[in-house]
Length: 60
Image 1 (tube, one colour):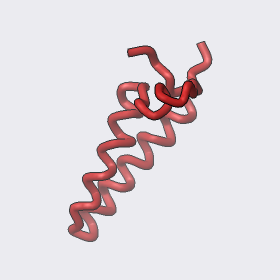
Image 2 (image 1 turned 90 degrees about the vertical axis):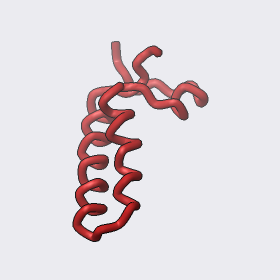
Image 3 (image 1 turned 60 degrees about the vertical axis):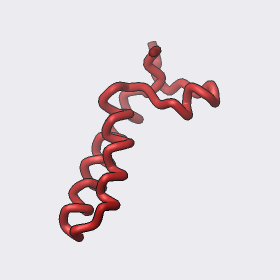
Image 4 (image 1 turned 135 degrees about the vertical axis):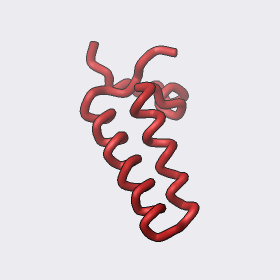
């Protein structure tokens, strides 16, 4: 599992994930669970669709 999510992309995913989860709690909606996806892809720095499409925003 090679990292394919860069620093800016990772930060955006983590912030968006937390915001979506918080909105789900605030509105008492199960849609907040969708926030887990960007949160995990940001935490692990690996995105399966990026892998399939050959996209890499990580600058090593």
